[in-house]
Length: 115
Length: 114
Image 1 (cartoon, rainbow over the protein chains, first blue to last red):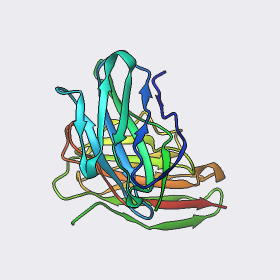
Image 2 (image 1 turned 30 degrees about the horizontal axis):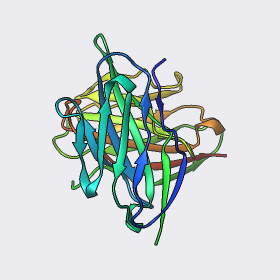
Image 3 (image 1 turned 90 degrees about the vertical axis):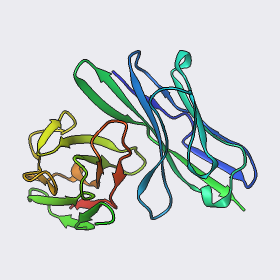
């Protein structure tokens, strides 16, 4: 069965540290990839998405993610985190199988940035 | 409206009761999604509407769950004979309609079944 795996469940960093959150999916066909973020007390919102083209995707607030097809990965990165990046981060994947599409979510990674 | 709205924000009910959860998508968005999120979990897909029809309801856990979108705008998620395991935050999202479109999420309805 298709699945999305986020390796880090809880991450604690100091401000200015670099961030990389892992996301791997298990599906060999066509996929669309997303990272969503949920700040404390706020709605889920899109950070970035990949559909085609350049596998290095730039998102909001200085985030980027790289799609590596051979590794089935879509890791999220930020070179220097801020306290305001404290949030829950979710990786999600749309898989296409014939006429069906299914959106599958990872369990999320909780990021805490200490000032 | 400016964003996706969901009502009620909180719902407490007793085991065995029937509940309805409402979602008002962003005006003009043809696609509407329902998710369920339990504590410490990612969103779990329930059902997806394109216009008035359910394009994919494969995520509905059983036949106690049903959703409608009769006019292609507001949607109602209906849960019959609620069980304690149904307790979760129910999220609604809408998008312009294509898979490439961003989904905009509502604040969710926190359902507690006692």
